[in-house]
Image (tube, rainbow, N blue to C red):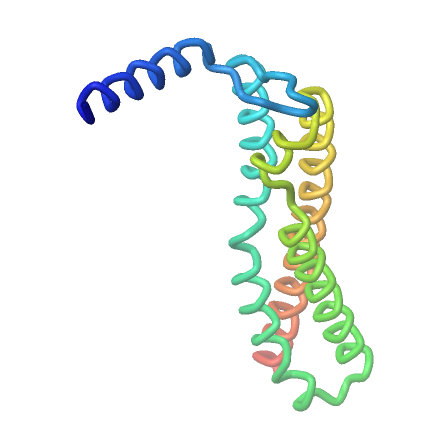
Length: 159
């Protein structure tokens, strides 16, 4: 008897899977086609590619900050100290924006549970633009800090 029941459940499961036809449930019971899911995954991937480009810069920014901080105590030039403070502040701000974006970044499962296909694509495009701005700020602040550090180190060699 148990074998018949198990066979029935397996048959029922197979039929239900076949009837699903590769669609996922979305907002209000609407379904995402395979093409829609693929487009969503591609948009998510583009957004995450920008994130993945920016993420390693956190280590570089930390290294640049560690290189600049010792000069705060050893330099007498107030202008250079102000430049160091500004460089450190800009890197910290960029890092904070990265952390904020990561905490608020969308999760596909949540999006698919609550939004339409068009809304998901729109949101992912907006998030890609946000993380691109974060990446730009990180790149700029890092380049400025590295340039300042090189300039300080070069001037110290001349002394």
